[in-house]
Amino acid sequence: MTNNGILCEINDKRVFLDPKNSDSLGVNFVSHAHTDHLPSKNGGIILSSIETNEIANLRGFKMENHVEFLDHFTLIDSGHILGSKGLFFDDLFYTGDICTRDRGFLKGAKIPKCTTLITECTFGLNDFVFPKLDEIQKQVNELISELYGKGIPVILMGYQLGKAQTITQLFGHWGPLYFHDSVKEMNSLHQKFGISLTDGIGHSEAEKNGLLAKKPWVMIAPMMSSKNKFVQEMKSKYGAVTIGFSGWAQSRKFSFGRRTDYSIPMSDHCDFNELVEMVKISGAEQVYTIHGFVDEFAKHLRTLGINAQPLQKNSLDNFTL
Image (cartoon, rainbow, N blue to C red; front, side, top):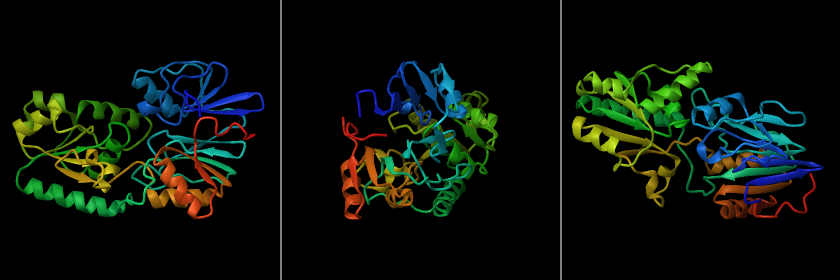
């Protein structure tokens, strides 16, 4: 682990995994296009899916020297968002952000056998065990129906990239259906890649044409706090109720997972049990934990007889790939 992210040195090759800045002398793997995983500067070869490349471009980062295929490296669907990949090379598997659960058009990751596993553990505490998707659909559909019966419009909230498209697929049958402009733009890019998503009008156009005054309706928007100007306006002008989707809603310890009127525990990451199962399936002899409850999850894996430790600076120094 370095100040620029995870560095693996293989013979004479340098491989950076989700670096903060692309390294001019090596291969730079970008797992997906969430902004916290995109490099801020170009340099060297950038290896990612074509979808990640295009979403990054939409978000203002144009990848130079981008490739989707490279000898001795295999990209593996990680099931997190559109185009998200893990990287398999030299019997090492780096998960990036990963989900093994099917969710609409997103199919759960299939885990390769490996000797060394570097895995995220965003929800690496046993507090985080998520309900089944059909249970979530039933709960939310009943809630929307109840609010609709009272003439109350509903705003469904999730991350602009990933969660919002899953929400669109799961609840796009409600109408009239509107989208926050930023979600509509991201949905259009997904449709370009052949993802079937219900169309709808952007919120600016809907408001301009007086459509939001005709209640009830459903809108899909990014996750925002109750103090956000857009949310306050939707509530004051139209009496909208917000339903937020976040894995953090599963635990009462983390209040930021419940910033909406109703909070639904749904995530684009593995939950605790899925993380444990993923590690077992990999058969890895050595597991390094990153991003999340790294100490707690590694400690739990050790109770199962799995050699695991948090990936700290220089912890790979004596490991030969």
